[in-house]
Length: 297
Ligand code: G1P
Image (cartoon, rainbow, N blue to C red; front, top):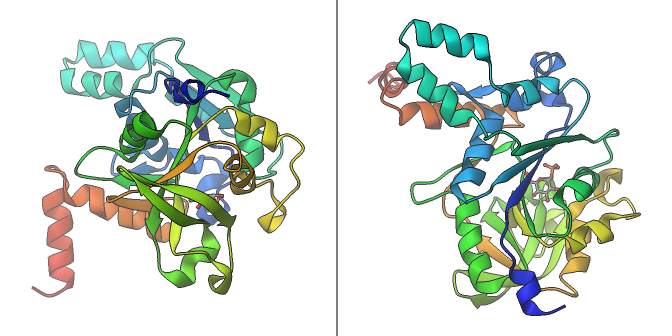
């Protein structure tokens, strides 16, 4: 494979949203966890906005049973639009328009069994086809003052091509929750990766740099995921396929400087709500007041 073939534009993004969300029961019994809101926007919309900001044109959702409302959410609601128009609610019409992908720019497929992230990604293979793609794990909501995480990854990809993933530092005791990488030689804004492991014990981890849920991957990953054996937790792990991919293709990392919130956990979800609410004009003052009152200031 020539290097130019590994430099093609990234037009599509995959969003795995089939997870059951057991950590959010009872809410997730009938509301997909991706539809829970951080302030007033569903978690999934943060990832879609981040992808859009990075220039992604087509949005591929890997859903599961009881997730149909995600597809409805990205459709237009003519009755709602008509009512808002009749009531001169221009601002709300703008909010709706902003959240709306263009016609024909979304695709939905289903992961029929919960076999792991690697399997979910593999389920998108036909829709993605033979081109590089972005992958965003929507549970991870990113906050950054100078451009989104995927946009920064795209910047590294422009220089390096191949595969690029974002990492962050965590407490060394928490590495067993994540995929963890070993950092190699620095290249521009990124660095080489030759080793990674999914959910290692702290004593076996190659570093405390964890994979934070933003990836740019070449389509060869699909072939590696096909018939892949299960790994950590008895699941088909994307990290295992990426480790094999870095034997044959350039693989780089980028250290994200913003904050990420794991909205698949209660702690992360609440932290995201407070962090985003605090910096908004409409909600910031009340959140600040509650915090100050509670701290007795
Ligand atoms: C997945 C990935 C892991 C990554 C994490 C980020 O794990 O397998 O490599 O670090 O997302 O949130 P999961 O959270 O699905 O267990």
